[in-house]
Every structure is written in structure tokens, then in C-alpha cells.
Length: 451
Image (tube, rainbow, N blue to C red; front, side, top):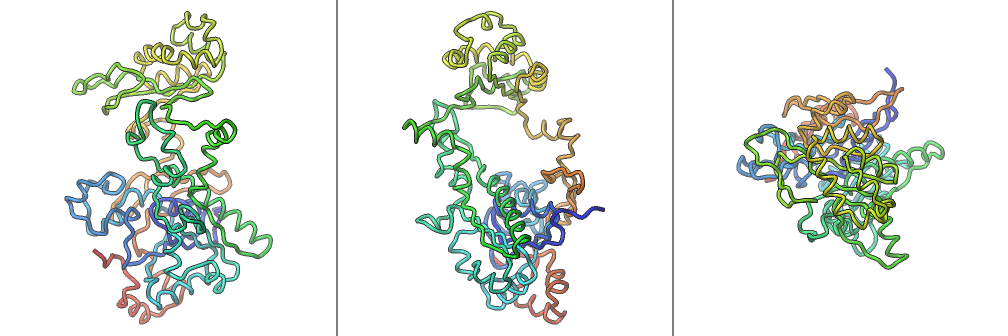
């Protein structure tokens, strides 16, 4: 079997919530030995769930991303059953050590000495309190690479600010651009695009630093401020402000340079669910039976084709609609005409009819649709993986498909402290007696000792 691209590299991961663990998952998928460094005495909310040992009542009232453990049963170790964590915990290892204890720092330094990369995404002051810096790592291993991913960077007035994705989205202005024209930002749902973007960009930065080290023998510190990473995604809006002094608000699913919207489709048959509200372009309440399709028309050829597909020759012949500006001015009218056709189609039928004629269109799928989608199944995107505390389930697989080095889920979601014996005994060379002493001291464990 071919060696994986990063096989032989060891990455230490002191990460929380999503952005940092997601970064580690890319490196693990590519073959690096990624070891999560965790502590039995510190539980970080929203990383391995909402709490180390939530009661059944708490689980029942938590949102799915933190409380959606299999069958809504917490089990003896619910932190090993957290859906958000497990989705990016494949192909990794986990060891525990108390870094707030002087003896813990000695253990950590021994691990640093045999590793290549450290990835962390904590507030700047958290790492300072632990005494972990690039300088301290470099003193142990001269060519170490350290990736820091604080929300706002490690310098400046916001350096120690706590932030999740929703806060970063607000600070960079994305929250003001989402939603509909007749609502304020309080109607927006939570979007955590900044976490996903930071995870992917962080992995790329590590690969660049590894390439630099291979050429020069030098390690380095890489800092990725997560907020700064999002600004380029909103480049046209900032450019418009700098050049024209305009600020933008939400436009729903519309686009300033194309005819675009999300259109209602025929519901799936279900007599117990009322038909969708005929209002358009949107309604504030939706049901599980709502079905939608997104359509985009960029140019005049696509416009003429769309009119043919939906049976609207009068719109095709209307000279006021012969260019994008004219269509933009009358989009409300056009949307109603398109919706009259889409309501007669299922999302899949509408998507296929339009795609066959060269018009970008995509069915809006719910979770059940995605799992059943023949294209997703043919790509084997969801893959089965086993974990002792939650059994066998489907998980998102690696995002790359490589012809010479096929990737996959080699190991299911890592359990807390699962690899303590491997790390302490095999990698670090501690004796059985030393291992037992460290276990008694609270460094080694497979459960949290906090409330």
C-alpha cells in the first residue's frame, strides 16, 4: 500500500471547539500522526460536548450539535459521543496530561522533542498561562513548527478576546450581509463559516511551513488570525465601500450581478403536513415538508433558456428584460413567474431540467435528502467508522480524493485518553511503575475529574 502524503510526521493538537480540531483532521487524513493533548482536569465546553457528564434532562434540551449523542443517551462517557467533535476526530490519537502541573510540562516537552508540528487555537492568554510559546517549543526542538489560530491574532487590542465563529462572523461584517431585506440580524441563524475556513487555511499553512523546513531545515511560527482569514471572503463589499462609500445590508438569496433566488417546489407527499405558504419569495415559518431549488441566471442566453424551460415566451420577448440591469429592476415580478413553475416540480426534477439546459440550479436538500442522494453515495462521501463508546455510524470522510495515495477513515473518532499507554510507554519510554504513578497523580486518565 502506498504511503500517505504526511506519513511519518507527528502533529500535537491543543485545540478547542471546531476550527483547530478541523485543521488537525486534514493533517490526520493525509497520514500525519495527530495526537490530541488533553487534560482530565480541564473541560472546554463545545469541544467534547457541552459538559463532561450532562444529565439526561440536559441532553434532551441541548441543540443537536452538542446534545445529539446517539439515541440521545449520554452513556458513561458522553464526551466520547459528541457529534460535533466526532465528525472531525477521525484518524487521530488522544493522550492526557495536566499542563498546569510542573510535572506535566516535563511530559509535554518530551513529546515536543519527538514531534514536528504543534497546532493550537486558544485565546492568546491561555497559552501564555500554560507557558507554551514558540520560543519555549524551539528551545526543546529547534525545527518545530507552531501554528497559532487565535480569533483575532496574538497582537492588538482584541488579542485576548474570547470568540466562537458567530462572534467572528459579526466582527468582520458577515452577519450584516446575511438574511432578508425586511429583517434585522436577529433573524439570522448561526453560521460558523469562519471555523471551517480557518481549519482548511490552517492546514495549508502547516503544509507550507513543512515545505519551507524541508528546503531550509528551519521551523517557524505561523499565526492565522481567524477573523483576518474571513475578510477576503467579503472582498467585494469592502472594495465597494473603499471606492464608492457604500455599505451593504442583507439581500436574501439574491445576487447583485445575476438573477438568483431560492424558489419553492412541490412538497413531498405527506397528508399530515399542510401545504407550503404560497407567499414568495419567503416566509418566516417553514416546515419539514418545504422543498426548494436555487436557480442562477448569469447572461442573456441563460435567460432565454430559462424562459423556454418555464414556459414564459412573453418574458423572453420583453425588451426591458433583455439585459441583467433590466431583469434586476423587475426581479420581484420575475421571481413570481419562476416560482409558478418550480411549484409544479420537485427540487430534483427542477434541478435536472435546468442543468440539462446549461442553467446553474441546485436542489435544496435536508439531511435525509443528502444521505440518500445518489451522487453523494456514488462518491462515498459518508463512510462508516466504529468507536467503542458510540458504535458504528456514518461520518464525513476525507475531502480529498488522491489517485496515488487513497485516503479514508483509518480509525474511528478518538476517545478521550485512548492512546495514553501508546504515548507514555511506547513513544516516551515511561516504565510501568512511572505510568502508574502518573496515573495516580491525575495526568493519565480516560475520564474527566471536573464537574
